Length: 280
Image (cartoon, rainbow, N blue to C red; front, side, top):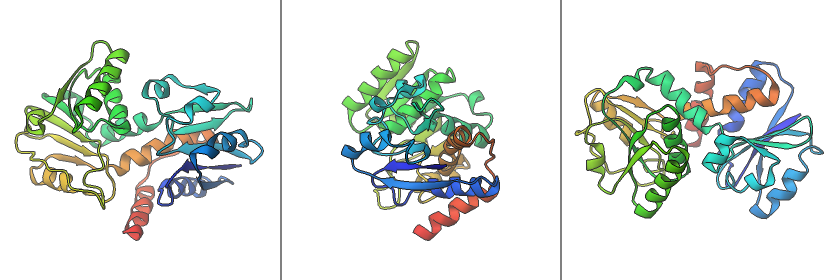
């Protein structure tokens, strides 16, 4: 049996490191391959999964939305988000689509800051792309309805708010075009953009007006400690890197493909870190 990942470009994906680690640890005879394919090839590729003995796929940028129309069944979470990141070939040979990004984000938050729900103050999200959509959905699902959203494009931000309002009518997401204003009375900040990632511009931000003992979560994981997280640590905030989200979102995929429960260990995280350091 084979599993793998589709996307483009994906040669630097960490997913093979994670899945191969678990295969070895749990003595599972399988392989995890990278399939870098063009958009026009997706439909024909998915039709031949069974004959290629491919049991499951991860889906990454830019195909998370593209694959939805090609699947037989898509779970509600993935439909709400308009994004599938995991495909399973069922025993009936039908293709099932899931989104595990929301699980990965919230699982890592609960592990890294177990008392986050008790914090007074606002939740502020930076960005209005696919990651932001998953993160906001995660908070709304946890009944955290009051959220501030900052994004450079107002139209894109308002479109995201409108989409979430349809799914959660009681939600109260306020758009801010001024980041400083969005951080007033903020106790939990999540950066859902690529700003601060290796090769990308830095995120221009001042955290001083955030509440004491705040939480700052950056979904970027290369570098592991971004400039944003450095600033958070200087203020003695809880600083959460993006690697944990990536690792934890892989858990449900692996378990559904191989019918085996797995754990996120220090050894697994170190294996991922070693790979990241080799890339730098």
